[in-house]
Image 1 (tube, rainbow, N blue to C red):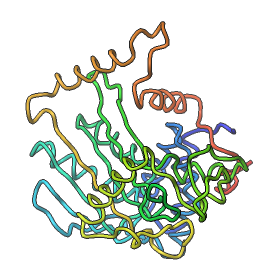
Image 2 (cartoon, helix red, strand yellow; image 1 turned 135 degrees about the vertical axis):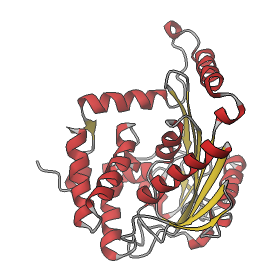
Image 3 (tube, one colour; image 1 turned 120 degrees about the vertical axis):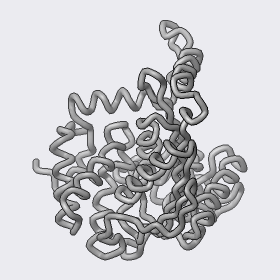
Image 4 (cartoon, rainbow, N blue to C red; image 1 turned 180 degrees about the horizontal axis):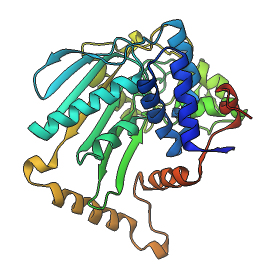
Length: 335
């Protein structure tokens, strides 16, 4: 894949968002937050999403708003209405608010309804972790996943991410959708003309498929069978239902309906260990746990979740980020 300069790609994407109607500073911030996924090797949720975002902005499916409206506030729990604004902008607002409240009260949750896709869930849990908090991010999505043994989409693959940093600033991150494979990865395979791994999806007839086009027209398979399905259902409750927002069939698959708002919902949870006297001890404990997990590096110790992606991001910032040529072409990247 071509390797491009991170700053130049950020500026190019910001320019595209400005051309689509966003003010220059929010456009730059949105581009930087979107690019975060590419830096960490999550390209299916990075700038590859930008063409669909630009299409939504031009069609009015994504609004030109840059801030969500506070519609309920109990102190520790806040609900925002995004008004279908770009997910990167309202998620930045929500995580900033959650962090501020958690520093004061120890724990805070901010839900966002009538929202739009926000990229990689770990972008937001890490954003909270980098302020010294435990960050938790949940989101719902359009129905994409079949119930175990089913053949039609009945629930979103609803991602969950949890992130913390140790006392040396090293991350420990979980970022997973509730399906075996993500729609973003299936779309990436479709663009590349390659098959998807077995067990990721079923056709509309309920038959296993390795064809990404059949998978996108069929349904995803929940990871862990009933376990992943149950988690997806409860994430739907904690996002769409808890916020008084959209859930189930109210959430739109915006890649298939670019003229309609995505209409999803998010929940951001921030936990402040300092509030219970665990500031330094928490970070030290995370580092000790990571060391136990890794074992003896000389013997091929196990990687700590999220550590490899942090290394990728550091290298990409130094040497450039890899982006598929087809994605660069869709972004009008100069050749």
